[in-house]
Amino acid sequence: MINMKRTKVFYLTVAVTLSFMIISQSVFAKAMSFTDVPTSAWYYNDVNLAYEKGLINGRSEKIFAPDENMTYAEAVKLAACMHQKATMGSVTLTNGNPWYQTYVDYAKNNGIISGELAWMSSATRAGYMAIFAKALPASEMTEINTIADGSIPDVPMTMTNAAEIYKLYKVGIVQGVDVLHNCSPNSNIKRSEVAAILSRMMDKSKRLTFSMSGTNKEFEITKQPTDQTISFESWATFEIQAKGEGLTYQWEGLNNNEFVKLNDSSEISGSNTSILRLKGVANFNGVKGRCVVKDKNGNTLISQVVSLTVTGISNTKPVILVEPSDISAKIGDTVYVEVVATGEGLTYQWEGQMPGYSFSSLQGLSGISGINTNRLGVVVSEALAGAKCRCIIKDKNGNTVITREALLTVQPIPLKITKQPVGQSGSAGSSWTLSVEAEGVGLTYQWYSMVLMNYPEPIDGAVYSSYTTSLPIISRRYYCIVKDKFGNTVKSDTVTLSGTNVVYP
Image (cartoon, rainbow, N blue to C red; front, side, top):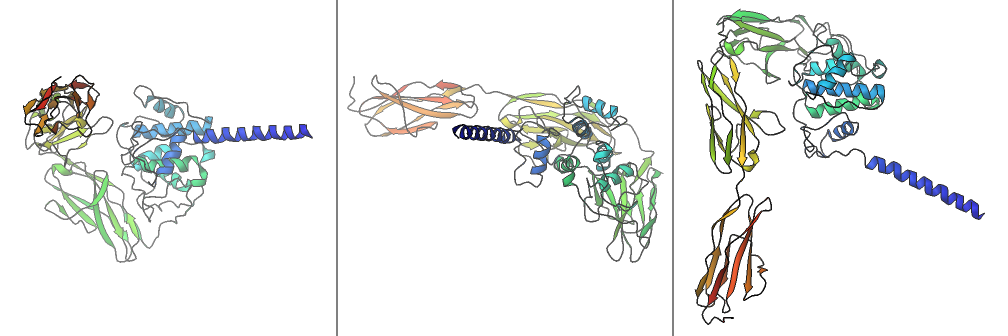
């Protein structure tokens, strides 16, 4: 009986130990430490799951950058890691040189991609879908949705990558960007959105179920607009034909990876009709657009995306004569970065980049001036250490050049006292202020006092550059310790305060 009890106790102990080990492994799994992914964010669980599976990384240890666009390099890395995870059970791929080369080679060898891409450019939705559609083996891509050909409003079957886009819809990986299931194939996708897609790629239980019927023959586009090529200053005509009742038209142009409504102007006509006319000006060269058609019931169709090519525009780009130089300056200094260029009708747009981030506009930032001139002014702060700037120069024909990247080095300010405190002898009880002035970064102060030959003691609350006290009857000596943010310290002169009727040692 005693042995049986001991046996039960033994097995119970083992069971508890094993349970603790399992819980510990779960609790101490790869922890996510991104400060820009709050637990309240809609994408938190998706980012956390993808991170734990080793599929995604942040832009740094603390920054995930959920609102930044995914690049083609990142898309290929994700596809390669998903494929290896699905086929081999774990991800062993590591960065190469450049960092994405290992993943590119793996993707090519496993039929995920076949050629080169603009790796560091933002991936379009159509572009990443073409990659992700081939990231998993067929056994992991079972179709669960009925999606009729031509049912995605802005993805006609003639579009490049239409097959891959429809595949992801059918498998339940994506369902579009709105209630009409539009794909928005030419727009970009944010890193936060990608995390949700990764969850569906790797976990079939999270996939979406829905269906989309075929094209409504009572309401359809019967003639798509086509690309146009015109000479400078002439007019291009884009036409769409559709069948349905109470049709309305709205032409849109692609601007910063988003389609925006066009309005009639001196260079645009027919923006709300079936025929759009654009003047052949430099700014329209290479522009992309589409037409949104609605019927009386609010049903929507979106045309294929078309482009305009304007010939006869001078291709002579502006010439940079003097590139912006690197700058080294102290905190508080105002410095200037300048570019000199030649060309007609030049415009300037300065951009900045903090370490670990992409270049972005400097508009609205404090301490910055001359953003749209050839001379950028910057008030140096500690936060700008390692920042870079560049200038985008454009001429009247839309030809563009970009300057070199100029680096800002913030010089450390050596800690030193520039003004010493001054002692005083006078009427006992009268007020006297001790002051010290110093240079450095993130300075803190602590005043000390001592009587006769006693050890100095810190004065409670005397933590500013100035300290006011009364002249003592018994002489006291005072000094201040100044510390900077790096832990460096410097001691001021020791001065004596004494009142009348002084008691000397």
